[in-house]
Image 1: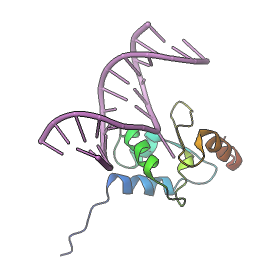
Image 2 (image 1 turned 60 degrees about the vertical axis):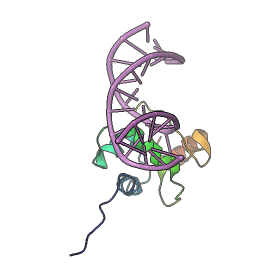
Image 3 (image 1 turned 180 degrees about the vertical axis):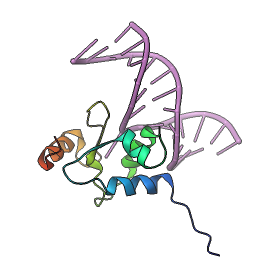
Image 4 (image 1 turned 120 degrees about the horizontal axis):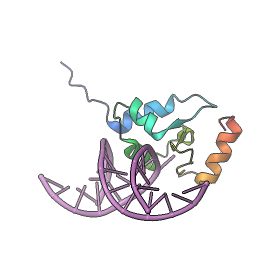
Length: 89
DNA sequence: ATAATGACGTGAT
DNA sequence: AATCACGCCATTA
């Protein structure tokens, strides 16, 4: 049989974020939940921090309190603008 | 295996 | 409303 490697947390997170539709946003908490690791909101942030893949709309992921969190690609400011531009705000 | 890290969350000041 | 301290979790050194 083929020993298949299970998707790691980061893989699942990337996948989830990748599916966030334009004009919408998801909290770190929600993403963690959808990534089958409820409560790992913090870890999610850590992954995003290291993720430099432009294919992944990591700017659609925001904090539960409405904050922007961070953005390794222009800072929270740019992130907010981006969301606004997409009509998510 | 253990400790440190950090784009978080919540409840208490 | 703004800050703080503590808890949580996967990753990385």
